[in-house]
Image 1 (tube, rainbow, N blue to C red):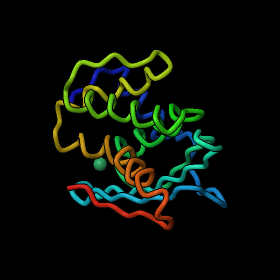
Image 2: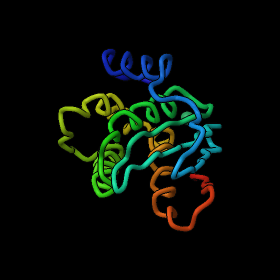
Image 3: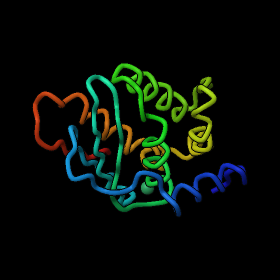
Image 4: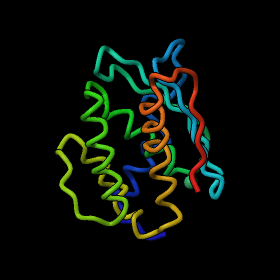
Length: 151
Ligand code: ZN
């Protein structure tokens, strides 16, 4: 897989020293997602403060791309409103589907995953945490834990 070296470094850095990895004692939203094609399993926990995301944590096992993407996601979503979370998720998805998007400067780490768009099988890895979070948010009022499988 050919990725720009700087981008590769950012991805490996998030993979080897993930940010916000761990299970909080309490979460307002809990969702788990799996990507059986690659063997990635990611759990996403969100702590809310009213309409805003106070903290995102994740746990799981999988390839470097799936875990680096979860780490990056947890960082950029802190302090965002639910509406902003959806907007950022849509931007990220568009980028992973090869569209040319303008990411806010504070989210430039996400750009490291841009090259993955050229590898359709790995796009699912990059999107797993985001898709999982999206399902968690959509089912927030239902309560309990949401479980999805991407294919
Ligand atoms: Zn993967």
